[in-house]
Image (cartoon, rainbow, N blue to C red; front, side, top):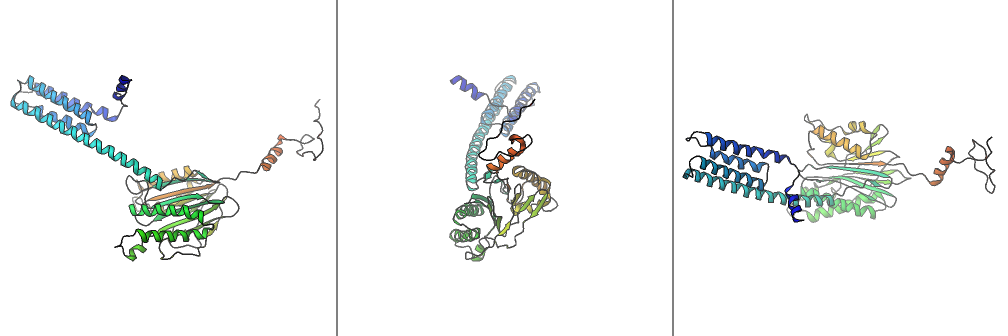
Length: 412
């Protein structure tokens, strides 16, 4: 077992850096042969330092130590073949050994930093997934898909947010955008998502939900704002939000738009922008909790698709400064499912900008699936399709209750 494990440790999958090892090896060979064959007043041996110097750019500490040792051996061979260990050769060998050792120490430190960064990044990614929970692929009769594009490098979330939860007879969702960037916006987005999940179950009516979120945001801002922050600056911290209530069946869906971009409704080949008839200001701008919200109803029928997004999508610019035409581009993919639609928009948005957008961008796609038919409808369809026949061939009528159906006619 020990020998097998050692052999497994020695065997590593092929990497592009392995082919680059031939470069320092070739340099050592060429410099050694050139120095030996050159006139006695020409010394090429000091150039051997190039071999271990370039190795850390594509290899680790072990390979760097190996190349350094080969360079020292090559310098020793040159000294032997060029007339013995003169003081000049001894100094060159010692200097090459010291430089190789320093390069190995540098590689070890770099590898340690890389491992630390990998651990920190894994913890950060886990924390980000906890803060911004991925939406389930299905909630009741709804199919859902979500996408987040963070403007910060190496980040998965920012100031944009979305969340969904099941209510008594439907699904409630929120998508929002916290003003600002960086850690403060992430903290406020995390707080708002937690407040929404709690209030969505506590508020039986949708009109009470924005007021509850308004009060939670104001308390959070006042408790966590720095003492030196002015009141005017505190009032500039707000959240645009779109809150939806989608019943499983019966009643139409409802939305309350608090300063957020309107959603897009995809029905067949048509794309409709659902503008709010009763728009509300963003959450967090009022000193007191508000009441009297008026929801806007809209129909979400079977196979309809609803696209929610933040302003980072429609404000993304190309090289000429043109905004991304979301509604025009979405019309190309009206027949796609939630995951495919997000995939098309993602690729098209990246191509439009030429990279990631300059601001955080979030999108959520919701599609209502056809409701399952009751069992008696299924039996009726089976009967009418000819799997159950009456007394005569070609009739679909069942015998009257309490009677015995006659035997089928014999075929001659």
